[in-house]
Structure formats: C-alpha cells, structure tokens
Image (cartoon, rainbow, N blue to C red; front, side, top):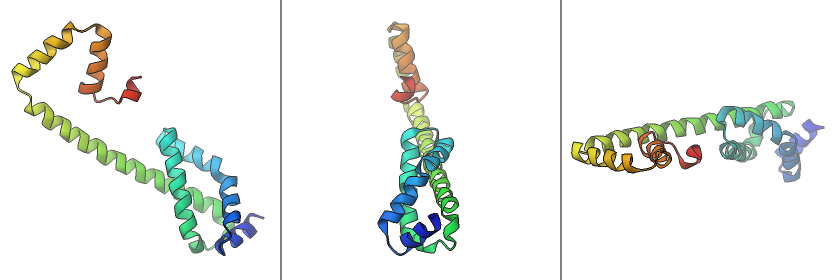
Length: 140
C-alpha cells in the first residue's frame, strides 16, 4: 500500500504524500531528537526534511524505500543543524575572548567588587550568564 501511495505522490498527489509523512512523522521526530536533544530543533529538522522530500520525491528510484530515504533526509538535516550550531558557538567563543581582552584590570576589579556585594544566588546567576555563557533557558 505504501508503494502505491509513493507512486501517486511522485505523480503529484499531495494527499498521498501527506499520508506517507503522517505514517512516519513520529519515527522521524524520534530520530531527530536523538541527534539534537532539543524539541524545537528536532521539529525544525523534520519540517525541513519534509520540504526537501517533497521537492525531491521524483528522484526516489524505489518506492519501497521511501521510509529509509526520508529518515536519511532527516538525519542529514540534523547534521546540518549541528554544523551550523558549531559555527555559531565558535564565533561566540571568539567574540567572548575579544571582549575579555578589551576589559582592563581596573574594570575587572570593579566588576568583581560589585559582584561580591550581591546575594550569592544573584551572583551565581550573573556568573553563569556572562562568564560561563549559559543561555537563560539553561540557567532556568
């Protein structure tokens, strides 16, 4: 039955394509989540994979391998997202190093003095955000 739906989808039947995706979407999400460990990123990867699969469905040679083909697209999208995140992290690290170098010793001492006047919880939160680079979601 899936092969018949794939053949219909290849001919342009949108309803068949949506039924195929409906049958595999939970598996695709689980695969994406295993790679990305984040709900929103996983959903983004699956959505991007659906778009790519729809645009390239005519390239699928064997309809019986639709599920495997689609999961492979999901995996490639996850890897792409991981590469993009790695670039952002590297750029953020470089920016952080530049910012740290540009602060003079007196300013650092003033900042440390002010931080020490804060209650321990607030001091820890500021330290995690601005010194360790955690996001607000990670701190929460």
